[in-house]
Image (tube, rainbow, N blue to C red; front, top):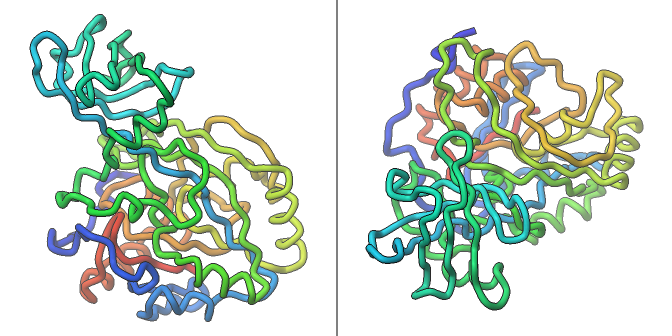
Length: 341
């Protein structure tokens, strides 16, 4: 299967630069796999398609303001450090710019010296290991000095950091938001809960590799990035009980899908656990835990579009995407969404 098999034409003006207000007023394309039909609605219509006894699985990861802008000590050259993954207390894997000037042994300063960073070593794929020096609490300094690491296709500055977080974000660690969850409001979640739908949190810390294009011509040659996940015993037990009772497991976002499919075997039993996953879901994959999916519209030739194609079929996915373009849906992180039933 070729990467080019997952291409589609997208006018640049359909790439959403700002989020919709209120959150749940984004548009929602509803696709029914049973009859291949499409409906054009809004996200606040979601409860119409949920039933008492369903499970709505959410990813409660929280994005950290991982983009630090400062200067190289001694020369005062502007630098940027983008945090990817915490390796130990004050040591992170990060992307740095300009890479050629940030060799091991280099020190950088942020916030007039409130936060200092030493480039310790080189890491895979052009990254660096970075050690931080500071007084006080690192997370408080990061919140004060850091910026949200918005995807490269968003060119407008985000006025409110909170709009790149889900309303249920709890556990800090992501370099990118699980964007399908951005459409929920507390009121909509409460309405869904009052219907008898169980909202079950799991965790996947999203890495920037989620935006990495597939460069290999043969899809199967692509190496997925690694992300940390956690599924508690309580979450696993509740999802299993709901599905065994005839309820559906409706995942909010591809991050929830990748997490559940990582911990679910061919027996379709979800198992509690934590660790790192680099699961790559593409057409031909047999889903074991997912009955329905809420997801945004994804980049051409991306692993996320391949995941969606595994659920609804490649040709159907591209047909639906062509319809979304024709109907002027807004695409990517701050865009509209699909409900795949």
